[in-house]
Image (cartoon, rainbow, N blue to C red; front, side, top):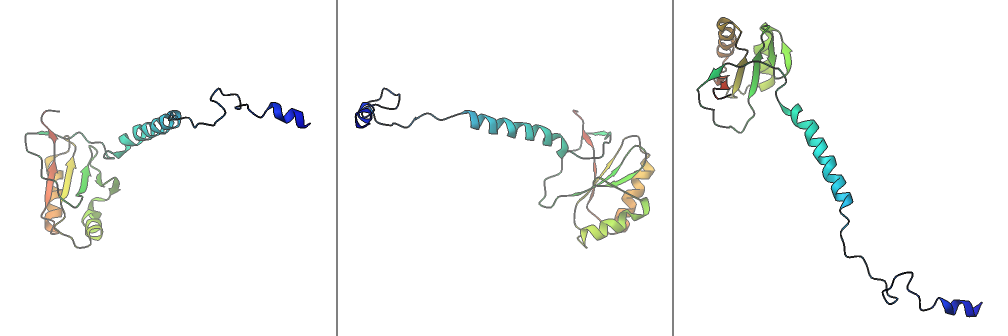
Length: 149
């Protein structure tokens, strides 16, 4: 048996490198490509979900956009059926001011954006604006679609 072990003494484990092990100096790109493709799919799925939840057909306007503020504004939406939404949650007409006061915890200077479908009667939009103003919310703005869209 001793003679047999001598036959394997100078071999380099199948490589022609002279018997010494050298690490492979190439980066394996397949795992990185897999991670990038998974991230791409995740972003493609989640990006459309990040838009506003209540679909309304806003009227056109030539008004300039408001400057960005630190605190995220509250959105009140009136859809074409006349339903009122606070963010994505439907609220009853008489409960809007009560829910807003509870949500804002006395922060009456917080910006409130009112979005209304263009088929809604002007009187209904003004009724909501009047309720908000009477409750002490003075930073209320109407949202319109830019004229170039």
